[in-house]
Image 1 (cartoon, rainbow, N blue to C red):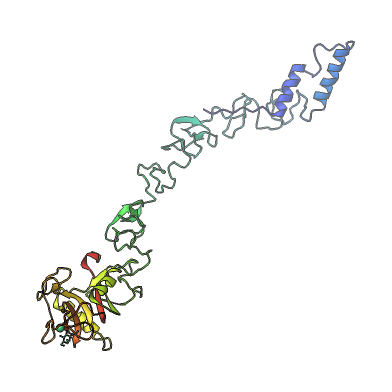
Image 2 (cartoon, rainbow, N blue to C red):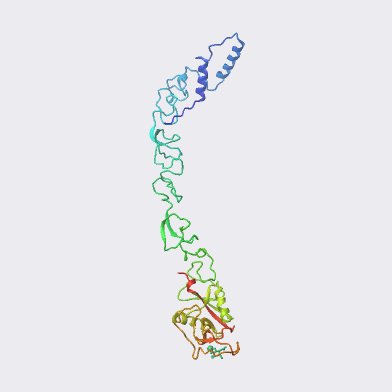
Length: 375
Ligand code: 2F8
Ligand code: CA
């Protein structure tokens, strides 16, 4: 129960006057005593010059109570016997504010308008609230009706944590701020759950819509095209989809140098895993003006006459030109002792030839290796 009693300047004056006696002139006044004279003079100044001084027997506010008995002689609503109301004023002059008119409510320690412990009080009084249900009465931001954002606190006391902050989130395994659109959930975002989807490789933090595309066989920026936008030093084509990139490099190099140049960007000399793939590559190089042939990753350098893909893939398709491979030795770029251990396309039309690996005269077809391709 909250009671606040505040002494008014008028009541202070009244108490001072009461100590002086009924008329303000007192008991031990002795006109013949100098001390008494000066005391009387001081009292005259104190009481007579006080702006709040009133005749104690008068009824200034005409409420039926003499000023001397009225705790607020200027307010007719305030006097002994007046009805106490909840307004922070001691209407009945009993020294207690708002007593007897309290309402059932709750102690509100944090002043947020909601309490927890039941108590009687007056609406509007500090520390009192008519509404209960505050699940943390030490935190003014926590109460029924409060916003409940994602902060691991039940701010609105409804028994559910972070209800207002929850929304659609996406698994962000690589914690790059972009989640996998195929892994949605409902909840609050965190380091491993993002409100933003669009990550095309959620296991690589360097790949996301915020990343910069570079020539590395990957779709770094998740725009749907690996190595798109002219980021590679060679022409790039895609077969059978936009994740599977090939580079068509028009630099005259020997076979090993060509493979090494491909590898700088995560590519290797092409392997044909099917006739369809080989035919697509052969058709693509035919779109270039006539000139050098194009190295592919086919060789018999390990065992003469036994041809295979450099990456060990099974041979399912060949397209040798008529009479090839002939390991004919020699030619204008090498001496006659050099064998022909490396394969090339577009020797005759789109068909293949075996050629000295050390001839630094041919273009090359690079392919993003399967292990470098996104799933
Ligand atoms: O086309 C026949 C033959 O022509 C050349 O050899 C003379 C090629 N070699 C060189 O040009 C170095 C052979 O690979 C080709 O088979
Ligand atoms: Ca040959």
